[in-house]
Length: 248
Image (cartoon, rainbow, N blue to C red):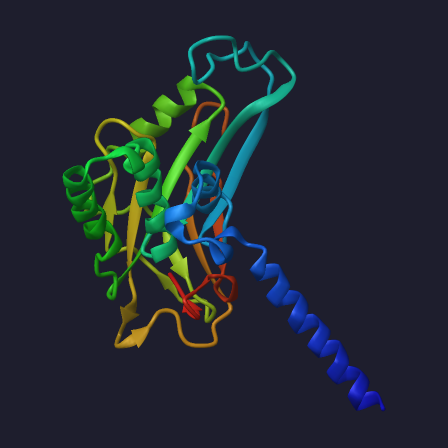
């Protein structure tokens, strides 16, 4: 009797997991049908994208906002914040979200056949890129004040591509700390940067079958009143399933 009860509980739990995944829009809809909000969610709040934030009470004069308008806060307001989003862009679903964003922005449905052909060729270069040897983690950062964003961009944009900053690691379930092979950041423009990690080290895959999690971390720079802190992002491999297998 007890054994049958345990079996019933496990079955119910399994069905609950299936139902949970079935509610995700990326399970129910093809990526070509994703909305703008769907794409934003995929890139900011999905198994392939994690957020890390640091906030401090503003004990001094209000700082300029990111739009250059009203102040970001007055003394005592807990409004000063830095947000980082870590996106595993070597995973196909994130690349599909990026292409779908481009489609929506370019009004793909209203393009001529020739325009669609040209667009599709550029999209295929993104969707079919080979990531068999690399795990690419893309970071986007946002701040509550323009001055923070400018100082952050000064830091991240001046790092050499062949000399990633210290304390940057991909950490697997065995505790191995893998350094990135390359670092990329635009020298002007968006507030973003990218770390390229190897998939195989010493002839062993960094992520092995049965692993549950991977983590990515870096040491955040000192920005005005913000002290240096260790930004850490944990990804659940069992939730990063795409076409029946983990996608990262």
